[in-house]
Image (tube, rainbow, N blue to C red):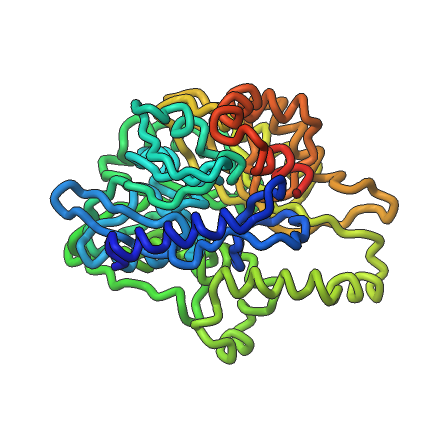
Length: 456
């Protein structure tokens, strides 16, 4: 636990580092790790010192809240709260996602069908603005405009140094049911029923996500949080060893995990993406230390390949003309899920696809989903072969157009290719501009369009 004194000292160093950045130079974080999948411009100007803003400040067990620093990872946050039987309302899938990153860049997980997105359980935030001030933003205070516009702003409005969030009481275990759906339409009906009723066939559902392996092999995984497994005589599974979690979805109708293992079930194999590195091959897996089977390690391997060009070399040997990275999370209205998956199979052809339902409580300007309406996040991560003369982002542009036509949005952690007019219409351009004029009048921070599309 960091404590308030350490937090005050970290904020002092942060403000000092802001003052060392030359006037007129763009302000950015000096952050070594990232869960973004888009190129970023090289910077010669030093970034903000956030080295001391990576922990939990305090937990209020009576109020069920935590004060957390902006660069604190969810791995660290859960390690502090779970011994008290508490977790954040939504814990994104990957260990090294930070709380500030999930709020300013959106996050999602299986509790989102009932708890929304991570920013919806935030009570207040301290935010370093582009003008070099730290202000406390709340839903109804002096800086309510900043609080409302901050989600999905990706640092274009400032950086959260402290967030006070609600915590949810949870038991030690999770029972899972992997329910196979006849098709996408059946999955849609089941998602609607579970989201509206909170149960399936009379049993409470606390977590809900899905895995679409093929058009006719779609599973919904229903999680029920429980104090004991004795009534079902189940033993907990361990997918940090030789077994791979996503394969169990096809192999088991029921399962059980500890709460901690359920929270990080997708991280060990980066959903299914670890297969690209051989980490799911039994003999390689036995030799690959478990502590290195985690998403941040795989992310570093991808970065190393981008520097060394190993995949490009192998593609030349295999005479593959071109390859495009398609790493995206999108949201479409629930009714559009069958249409999207049909389009996706025809135009992209990548499986599995992760499905995660969500509902928001209010309309957030920079990611304007309709409050109360059920959406489904579809996540797909990999590469596709393209012709050698393909324009940059050919497949990703098609995804953007299709999602937009279906009344959806896509997350901005990966490459984006929108023109500015369309982008501003989709992501609250007018609202963000007004907030920037108040809190960043000298444009020390890059705009959201510059960050998400121009990669500046």
